[in-house]
Length: 348
Image 1: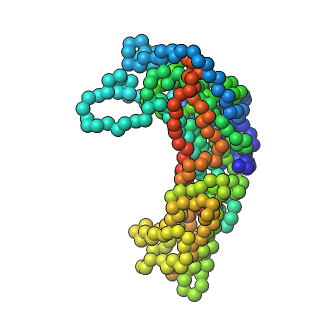
Image 2: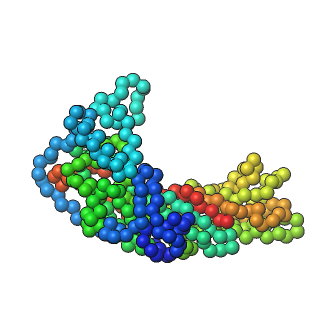
Image 3: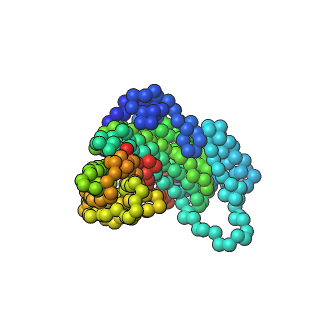
C-alpha cells in the first residue's frame, strides 16, 4: 500500500499529523507511547523458528503462594510502566467460582487478535482531508500455565509509511532484528487471562488512493426536485463486509424516490437518513451506484455522509508467523483473527 505524508518520527498531535509537532499519545490500555524512532522502530522480519527438543520445563503456578507472588510482582511491573492490567481474582484462582449457571467456554491456548481502526475524512468536492489507521495486536493466554512462557514470531510486508511500537516490557532489539515479540526477561511469564497490547502501529496519509472506499456524491436541482447520484469505488486490496453508507436528508413528508441502487436501501424517516446497504464488496462489485430524488433542497443537506464497514484484511501487512515456548522452543497452539473497523469515516 502506498504511503504518503509520513515524514518525521513519531505520532503527531494533529488530527492527521501532517507537518505538526511530534509528540506522544496514550493508548487505550493506559500506557504512554512516545514518538517513534530508533532501533525499536525498525520493521520486523519473519522469524525462522529455533526449535529444540529439550524436555518441558514446569511453568509458573498461578494461584499458589509462590506463583501468586511472582505474578503480582510482574503485574506491578506492568503497572509501573503505566499498563492498566484488569485481572480479577477469579481469573487468577485455580478453582472457578461455584454456582452461577453454566459459564461460557473459552478456547484454550494463545489468542492473538489484530484490530485496525480507521479515521477517514473525504471531501465532498473530491480529495481527502486525511486518513489515519491505528492497529493493535492483543495477546491473551488461556490454558496451561506453561503457555505463558512464550515468544511470538511476527511476519510483515513492506508497510511503507507505517510506524510500529512495542509494549514497554517487550524486548525492542529482539523485535527490531528478528521480528520476535518476547519479554525482556525470557524467564518471566506473560500474564494469563487478561488481554495485553504487545504491538501497535500507526499510518497517516493524505493520499486519496490509499483509502479502502471512496465515495462521490453529486446533487443537482431540476424543476421542483433534487436529484442525487452517489457512487462508491472500493480498493482491490481488501474485501469489505456489511457496508452502510448513510446519507442525511431534509425532513420529508414522503420517502425519497430511489430510481436505481446496487444493493439495498433503507429509509429512516425518524432520523431523516437514507441508508445504502451492500452486504459485501469484493472483486465482483468494486464499483456501485445509487440514484434518488427528493423535493428541491440545498445540496449541502446531503452531507456529511457517514460510512461504516468491516474487513478481515488489514491495511498493514502483519500476521502471526508462530508462537514458541521460551523453555524448550516447542510450538504453542495459537489462534486469532484480524479485523478492520471504522471509528469515523465521513464525506464532508
